[in-house]
Length: 506
Ligand SMILES: O=C(O)CCC(=O)C(=O)O
Image 1 (tube, helix red, strand yellow):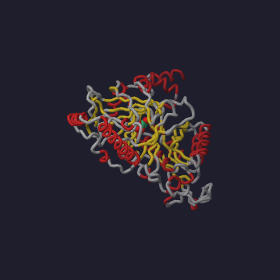
Image 2 (image 1 turned 30 degrees about the vertical axis):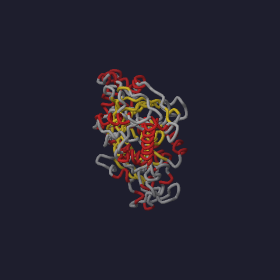
Image 3 (image 1 turned 120 degrees about the horizontal axis):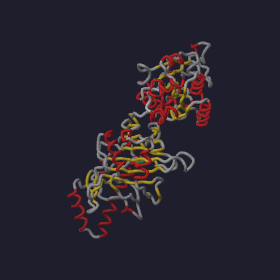
Image 4 (image 1 turned 90 degrees about the vertical axis):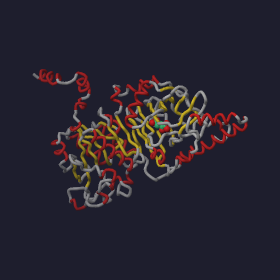
């Protein structure tokens, strides 16, 4: 009888799904059967000046991470459950009643410290959310949380918040004892030290919790999810973008790794710690020209088929054309790109600089150019994601991908950085025209070349040297100035690169 019942229910399932469900029963869970449980997103824990926030590492990064987790969970149709602490002395004997482990008053009802952090105020307790107030470390102790979750049909909890080794641990432990499946988001929880955070995550794994990342949460559905307001507010991360290309997760990485011809690129006499390739919309002998300080750039080739298909999918998100792609292969976690701002000399404005990511998730740091002006943001770049970086973010913040991991066998990542370039170069005539050149049209560029042909060798070398030096100086200014005005690039430059400076000034 049991066998017949099983056969009947399997008969209603698509065979490929059936295999997945057999491999991982949790895949069968509906989004509404899972709840993101946000623990203690309160000023005393995470805001500047909060009683405990100094005891937590990078509270502002945790605040961002919580806001992103809530946004992802909502877009995926999961429940969101808010857990706030009230440790008021008036809460009575049967409560922590101000007796936190440091003895400091914390989350006293009605105070600023007990209020929800700014990053989450507009999200907190929306219609359909669950919410409890706890007086102990565990969100289940003397609350209605278990009853509320069960009546909402929730079976899996995705726990985030503070602190990893205190309330997150106590709540996850209680949840496991009550029979819930529990995920803990390692990059949306925080503790007083990295050591305490890591030890608590290990303990959580020992309790049977699955420790995951925000990127894994975002990838835990086929649908696109979008995190807006990143960087200076004009940037956004789109996850799960390429399902329409029909590729399984990871398949695009393999295709790109083989399809693209990778090159070594030199900068300041050394190899950049990545492999690179440049592709673009080449028409006849004319290509889009993107200039930045580098000793040399690989020769541009036409878009290869997969890069072109990805470009078109990305254009549907930017709403403007993309005619240039810098492809980069981070061979292991030891490959990296240093903190910099993109040089916007040749960009159409307004436009986005777009990083499409494949393979291993790496983290993009958006760091303020003026130390301490705003907190650094750490944006995960999952496989199949597209980061649209606005030019305001590029102006006000550096972006960087740091080394991570300890060994060379860490997984690789490919990024495709697409740009909308408004400067053009003719390989046959060497003419340069468009937004980043004093020549706005091809005939004007040819006229400049004709004038130069009249110069003697020394005069020509001096002119190209001066122009290159001016270009380098403005590049350097753009790299560090958070209020850089692109008008400083005017009237523009005709040199392709900084090679005229070789032997001095570069
Ligand atoms: O790999 C990435 O996603 C970032 C690349 C980047 O910052 C750049 O090429 O300027």
